[in-house]
Length: 210
Image (cartoon, rainbow, N blue to C red; front, side, top):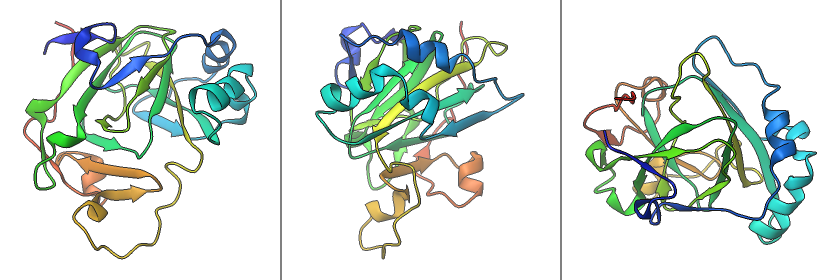
């Protein structure tokens, strides 16, 4: 699978690199979280991370004053499994190099996305990037299983919280898994086994460096 960089022009439809933020303190805090023995963990809001000086910068300058949350996704992963999107951009920052698997919301056809549309992007350590609201994404892929990954996740506050108790009135409503979280699961994923909407067809991409 060809791997692009977030500095390549191919990344432009999916997001952008964010400049002007001092993330050194935040990276040091992220390093303190021990990796799980296997799989991934996610906490949508971590007070220790939100106490970092850059949090206010992200909230006021990057999000233009919107209330946000800052949490962590960390562990080990090398497979696509699912793709999700939000109504707002997501900011990501990693302590080590990793690979993100992306697709576009407008590539969903009749509630299904072909995983052949997915592109891989390498994100260098310490690079703050914005993943646009229309970019489908999920957990990162590690480059080294032993080292795993640690990735900060900034989103509007409340995202990934409890699912609103809505009546399904549209095709998109079927995808709503949590607050501000629309998800398409691959039939082979544990999320599908747990009842998530199955909306990915094709290979459940497993990433590995050539």
